[in-house]
Image 1: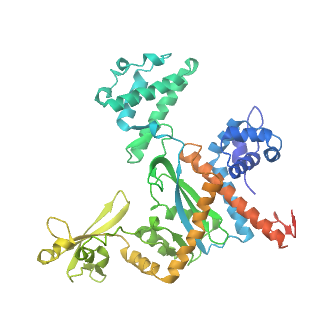
Image 2 (image 1 turned 45 degrees about the horizontal axis):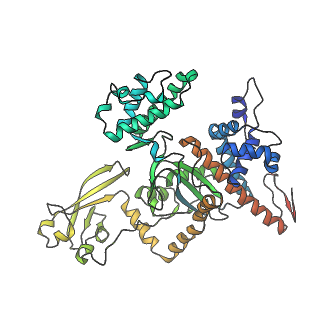
Length: 481
């Protein structure tokens, strides 16, 4: 049973009674299955489509009601997804013996043309604060209106054009009777965009969806997008955790996914197999899984090799050919020379610690030019934390058994992503902002899980197996109650 107290308290007061969240959830989930995501199209279906009319119990919520519900009920929509996981667990179709995690780039509802650099954004903010006047007409936006704007004269031709086009767009939308409200909206947009520059080291920010980020898709094309993450159980392919983030890679998303799985399903048993692609491979992730006594299956990133042209002597001195002496905390090179620990640093970009080891006899070595490109001729190794655990996993991944287990990931998590992208048409977000896109993605994952559960129940009814989920589902041969 779900608790709707928070929703009901928030919607108490004068006016038309609120639509029950069950009704709105039903039509939103059905719309995801039908590849209908526009709130106006959903509202039209509620009036015209008999399936939606039945789900809505012959009520006709307005498209704004549907849109606002989808944006403003994060906790409720998250609980709906969790209930599908709980129902699957009660059915016994979640084993939690093997899980696979993967990420996918989904396009944001924003255009490249709406992006600005911080210098342009500050000029726009300055103009809005000082120069924008009530009732100004579009044809009066000329260079002289910007001349007194601080920083405007320092912009290049492209920057000046961007300022004028953005401000002109805002002015065109201004309603004379509601100027103050519109001015506040513009100021708020500029403020939120400036906050994104402070929060993340980015070159440009979108004015339509400030929280979206430029990311490369599989075709290596840069688009404003979000990084969606799912974790799938291997027994029936149920999505047991999902999230949306702004990270351009998957490196820091494995731990949050495991935490979400345990929040939705309870603590994982020792030895649970965790499969993920090389994008998740880091010493921190491997150490985290080992600490929890889980069984990781994560391959190392493949290095680009040039075996056809590269000098064999150079390949010989690759970092993988250096042997670690754990007792003395030193590395031994292929020429049997030692590299001693020098210092420990922190890499801000990758958010990880690493250790530097420095060669002791490199200048005397005849192969120093093949070993390093440094001017001083001394080889240095940059070793990430938990390198020992990382090497142990690398050795494990070379075994036939590990390859077989990891290969099962392609049959589980990748089809799940392909399902909602191809079959449900979920290739881009309709909503904007991290909070709203998380709600939208939760609804997609809820729809995917419910369809899998429904198909499973149909199959069980055909073979006459009786099933109960807290007394809610009962199946007899050919009959479903």
